[in-house]
Length: 292
Ligand code: R1P
Ligand code: URA
Image (cartoon, rainbow, N blue to C red; front, top):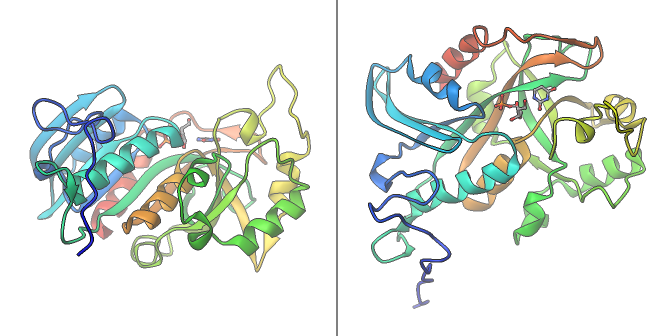
């Protein structure tokens, strides 16, 4: 029989109270259904729909509430901004689900989490004005995260990746972009006719990587023009945000189901932004809570 891998205290850091290092959650406090949001303040908005709350904790940008919505046990977890935080959140959630914290070895049976990210994004097409909900069927990672994990080539859409790099005349100094699908079953259940199904670029930044130029010029001034006209097998790139690729990629490698849906708050074509979105995102939250 294969010897079980032991996860040393330096690799999986467990706090004195038995909770995982950054999230401060214990295994029994995590539900199978998880809603991820960027903004820690959005956690209370999601949980305002819960009929019961069993646990709440906050440390740094990681705010967590576990409770129930219409009898379904759900954990809502904030990630803060960016794929670096997704690396922390996904690894710690997976450890809570699949590693025995007493023996520091993998559990015998795999526990699969369903993870739905509810975020905000910038729209890139005429059919994605402010207020549109976009479900990411595919994500293009400009963040480089998945390239650090084995198995990246087995789970990514390499043909799409190659077509995109050719179209963009990709500068390899930027990063090695990866293309990864969201979970099909979850997308079919959650992205109904009221959501646009699209291709999302997840960036390691809000400004330059998303083609926003303030005082410092961009390396490629035509980046967004090229992004907006790229088409592959009938799919167009619909939006920019900052976490969906890392979420879809790590979840696939770990054996979880994940998808991202975002509300457009800035339309890059129309050059318009909606900063009063905090009330309207609640409608998207309700749809996800009903369908998760
Ligand atoms: C940038 O303003 C942040 O907003 C988007 C981006 O992905 C990034 O995290 O998502 P959230 O509203 O979920 O944070
Ligand atoms: N979030 C992003 O990452 N980009 C936008 O343009 C809006 C929200």
